[in-house]
Image 1 (tube, rainbow, N blue to C red):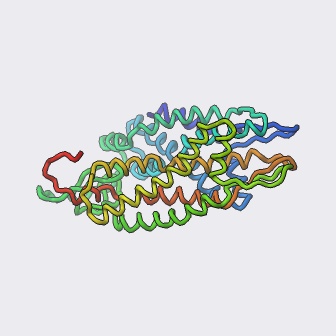
Image 2: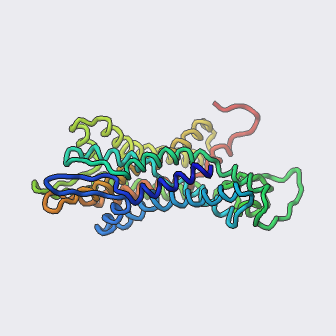
Image 3: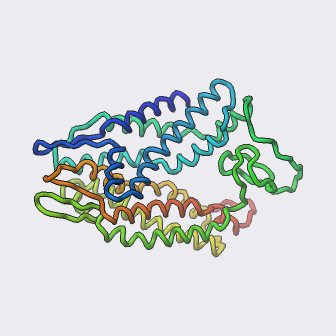
Length: 368
């Protein structure tokens, strides 16, 4: 684990600080790094979108890799490092929000889109992002709970032990972070310090709140322009739908399908699925609990892929800056759509899937 993580750290640095792609047209050239693209968004009064892209593609992957490298090297040396519990909790949180693989697909879509506007020259950052995506796929397969179990048997600083009351009839709770099972009367996990809850407080109410906000913003996200194009031929406004039409009519139906599914179908299905889950949990329904649990897992998995359009906009805005020839800027639809993606992801995280099974009587039968 330490070796793979160390390799991913070096690849991450190359990917962040080397240009990803360069465009050449009419004697002008333009290249972009990820940080440079974020800076362009910031200077164009899209600070919120710039912050979100920075968090999901740079800061949180860096937190995951840095914390994991520090912990694995310490465990390999035979001791439990200071801040062990907080670092592994940070790894779990960063892993849920890091979106390097989504960014990689966004880069490829941007390159295909740019081939019709200018000559595309691939730069080292693109290959680094490709390698980083593969390495992170391996890193994500590492379960932090294994590291917690290893740390239990090594010398080093640890949390003060809680008083244990032995009661055979005491209810047990599992910690969401490290997986330790302990009596329900403990307020915090004895191993990692995470707050323990039998069920997430106000889970359904919070899910409905974020879901309603996302549904309201979904309308302007699709109606307002996500990009403005200023060129010698005039000004053109692009919405998400027009982007899908562009790829379809330009001979790239596969990319059109990817953007259509990720930016239109997936958000609608997420809103509908989360509404169904929240409504059935609120009514304490016993209807198909296994299928609803699988639906929740699917929503959790595909939630991040709706950010694909935002990453394409980020790179396009940074690349197409040819002074009097053509300049592309971000529109208000990008901000609304970014908010929809973030709000739906928060809504799915607020929903407690254990509520699906609470009304189901435990008689030992299988639910199919």
